[in-house]
Image (cartoon, rainbow, N blue to C red):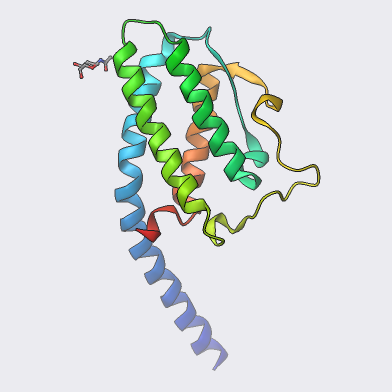
Length: 158
Ligand SMILES: *[C@@H]1O[C@H](CO)[C@@H](O)[C@H](O)[C@H]1NC(C)=O
């Protein structure tokens, strides 16, 4: 009985993962596509510095983290003055849309299994994070996007 139970639970879990994976990949592909183009273009802009949520804090405070990344992407659009201004503006705006979509879904109680604030000190304000070069900022944003798409329920509610 116990064996049968765990086998059927495993089958259920595997099937759930497979069907979830297809939908998640469809949804994530577009966001990662624009993200990597943006990362490629701003590669040489080391002097732009942005507040950068990182590590565990980003995961236990997904809402504040998302808002912070989006706000700092607006700062990037404002501060970038290279020859690809239009591209950066368009790509960063698309990534912001992805983040806003996530924020919208995050209002569901089940999202990520977290409810804020779960840190003893509450979730930090954007300005409490370190300012990092845009290169490092984007590396942390990439990790956060991976967390969003592969660990949270984001694309499943559509
Ligand atoms: C910027 O956008 C234009 C028009 O879409 C495109 O032709 C060009 O290749 C883009 N530049 C870069 C560096 O991606």
